[in-house]
Every structure is written in structure tokens, then in C-alpha cells.
Image 1 (cartoon, rainbow, N blue to C red):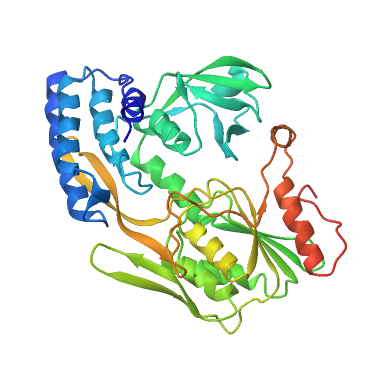
Image 2: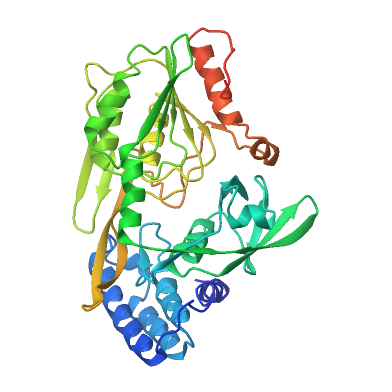
Length: 414
């Protein structure tokens, strides 16, 4: 890895913690964490050769950075930078929780190569600071933004090592400005996290009928039992055309994704294989007798990930669906979480997400770090975001109507 990139990662993770700790104790703890994480990755990563990296030497480099660090953030940054060198979407360090999360009151993600704000909390810090939907973020706290790393950057600054303030560099046309957004620090509890996960699982999809047999399905996650998919698809049985929205769907359970494919595929086949360090497991489609066979149009975006990408690409390969939208995230692997206890009295844990398998499509393709390229690219513009328009859904609905032999009379705003 270029030294410049390693240095950038260390700077990114080096901003001081909001809480003052005993530095000597933190250093001892960080070295112990490094030892365990390095071993866990060495023993469990799907590639026993760790992509050709000299893992022992890189671990020692991280140890030296911990010993020279002036704060806990730098120490955990050294560990995170070690795992980053695998360039793996499902291998990451989860530091001990600090008990706080930063709420800045906005959401942003890649649209094409731009990072754009797409949601603002009207009463949140970002709105009060003057941030608007459609604003392009080109820098955060003096670090340049980029499509491949923006999500990890914001996760770290919000969840892992929350910052008291974000300095966003906003680019508009040929000019730029800095917007300072103070954090609203909220307690981070296990109950709060479980509630957020439960809310998504309890409402995994929504279905809307646009009339004349056009059915729109917004599937938010595959992290639900297979029975949810069966219930969802029952509502499409009489459809003349279906628009399936996988935008923002981060994946979930492989078996649930396969059940969805059973409901829409026209013939049996092998989607691909999950490959571990010593064996591989096929994912096979066995179409249901009650499957739908009408035209299918699938929406994806930069946050479509994992099982959603596998489904979209397989449908594309078999020409069963037209894929519309932005290139997907390229985060397609199987992972396990390894949780370790470091304080019995306070029950403080740290963890590591480790990719134990990679996914290889039936044609030999790997989607990791590549993603799915749509048949028809569609990326909302800055003005679309500012005016709450959804041109990609409008396009999918128009294509669905055409495929069903209907006049184009529907758009997403109706």
C-alpha cells in the first residue's frame, strides 16, 4: 500500500477521543487488542495467504504506532489501518464502545462519484448550520471525500470515535465553503441499537400498486426469515410488471436471498459459490411453481450491498431483469463477528468483523470492490435532491408500463 494512503488513514483515525483515559493503560490495552485481532484475522480470513501481505511485519508496524501514539484514537487508528490494508469490505475493527454516538442531523452518500446530502433532519444540527439537500461534500475535517471510503469515514466519526464537530467543505459550482456542524451527542446503549435493528426487521418491505398491474416493491433488507419474502411476493402474483427497489438494501441472509430468487427465476441454476479457505458452498435456485414471470425492473444505488448485489447481478446475467440506477457498493462476502471481553467489571467488549468466505458468481465474476454496473445508469442530480424528485423510480415505472403494454402515465410523486 502507498505510504501516502497509510498516512491518510492514520490521520483519519488519529483525532483525539472525547474522553480522557489513562494513556499507559490504554496503550497496554491497545497492544493486547492488536495481538488478538491479528491472530483472529490470520486464523479466520478466507484467504490463508492474506492476499500476499506480510501480516507479521504489518502487525509489528501497527504495534510501533501504538507505542508512539499520543492518544487512544491514534492507537485504535493503527489497528484499523492494519485491517484496511486487506481492502476487504467485511473485515474491520470494532473498538470498545465509548458510550456515545454523534448525531449531526444529515445523511449523505455517493451519487456517481459525488458525495451528496440526501436527507436533513429539520430540527437537527446540520439544518441549523445551513446544510441543504443536494449539497456536495468534498471534504470532512480536512480530509478529502471519495466514493470508496466515505461510508467508513462517517461511520468512524459518528459511531466509533464520535467528534464534537464536523467541518464540511461544500462545493457548489466553482466555489466552496466550510460549514461547521456541532454534534448532538446521544448515549449509545445496547437497547437503542437493538431497537434500530428491530425496526428494520419488523418493516422489511413495502408494496405499492400503481394501477393497471404495475407493482412497486421496496425491499429494505434480506436480514429476515424466508417467510417474509414469500409473503411479499404473494402481493405481486397478478402483476403485469414489477419494480423492485434494492436501493439502500445492505444485504442480509443468503438463504433469504435465494428464496427471493426462487420466486422470480424462470429456470433452476446455480447463482454462484461461497468459497472459504478450505471448501466452497453452492447457492442454487429452484423456482417455485407459483413464481412470477412478468417483466422485472430492479433499482440499485451506491448503498446496495452483499446479498442484494448478488441477486441483482444474477438476474442481470440471466436477462431476467433490467437493472437501473448507480453502480452498487461492491461489498459481497460472508462474514463472522468475533467479540472479545476486555473488562469483566464493566462488560466492555471490542470486536472484529472478518470475511470468512468470498462469493464467486456462476460465470467466475467476483463483485467485491467492483459492484454491479446497471444496464441503464441513472443518478439523481443535485437539483433532483433539492426538489425531492426521484427520476430513477420514474424511469423504472415508465419502463414497466411500456413492458406491460400500457401508456406512460405514472410517476413516483403520484
